[in-house]
Length: 632
Image 1 (cartoon, rainbow, N blue to C red):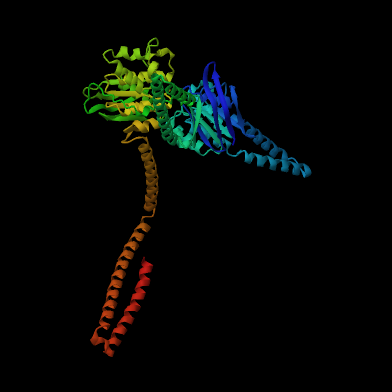
Image 2 (spheres, helix red, strand yellow):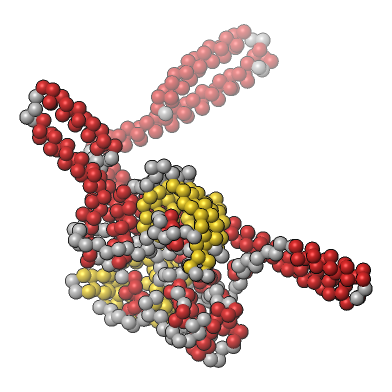
């Protein structure tokens, strides 16, 4: 055990956040803390790091255990460059290296015992330097920076000129380079592109320390963690497995708890009805029986009402107008900013009913393409054609049109006055707004809640072609699951940009991979796309080997021709030998049959002749077998 949380409780005023949280983590174990926004996940990490104090309980950390922490929001940096910021983590190693270089110079002028002493000291320093991976630290810095999406041209950029997301990547790089025994990561994938996320997955999976992750990236968690701690309604529950195991098991547990609660409620109602009936009889025995039942009912340990099981809810969202089969055709689309060409000659063709995910590295122009389609940005060249009866609904995380002073219900009701209250409530319920929640004011909602309202509003529109830019940003896992369900049941057409691979995997029927060379289409979900990428990589490697072989063959064309001729001769000789072997085998078989004939069996001359023929045939056959083995 390297770290444990024992009975951690935390409240802000009357608002209880954490109540008796218990879990531990072993060396090299990878653990995820999950829960809805506001469940207390980040608070728990801060308590572990002693940035906040628990009201009750304690954090136990193993002896000599070092801990590193990546918060969601980073403090400002100052004058260092990106490379300098990371290399500073290795200052002890750099100092030791400088001491070794200095000692090497000093030893040139030493003799006798002084030289012997210096050599001993140098040997100890070298051993320490090797233990601290001194010969590899520069390549480690470069590898981590490239893995996190920085080009070598970025290495010497001042950190104070970077965006918030870039600064977070620098902080993550510093943390990984320091290699603590326990790494705490709060939403580490928020500012990474897909390649960087895949690199980080591999790095953390193979990391020889323990890792605790708070993340809404379910695909990321699936690849890394072996234990999940869920915080729900201030309590913690531990699941041993990855995210998919947790998600399946959680629903089983919730359903079981929900059924137990409903069964108990039915039993309570039944007992209350019996008690009321007994009291109505108004007789001494009936009243005593009623009182006895009341005592038992009062002693019953009441189950808390569990969170509702939303997965059973299915909402069919059907646009009022069906589009034609051809929804969108983009041909030759090109966009540049000054001398920088973002993309050129882009082509895509989207049909009715498709759910298309547009993916690619940061900076390739995915959001720009969506904005051009929605006429929010001009194109440099190319043609965009919408099909018949196509009505676009556009969701941009940065430009949500909501009214702060309205309630959630009024926001939708005012936008769609002809819609019944029941339908509005059903849609809001599908996006996790139930009961009195629908009367919350927009200004009091979190970013994720506002995102859900905007998406619910969009799904009710007359649009039959939804264009969504990062629709899962700021949504917690439960909200993402609700959106996934809504999109999978939407009968229109969808084009979206997302970095959420689990979301893509659940919703996409086609992947468009945007690269500098253009767009490649994959008919399938994200897992299929990755499978095809692996096949393409293997094919490229095979082609490279083939090309190398072809080059070698051209350089030695004469030798190749000779070998081919030898091979043809070998095959011909082999066929001839096999044919002769079959011929002799049949000949010997015929001789054996002949010897069994009555008139031959008593004829010594014939038997001798047959025996001589067998001897000669067997001699030839033995030679042919040896020749066949050699040719084979």
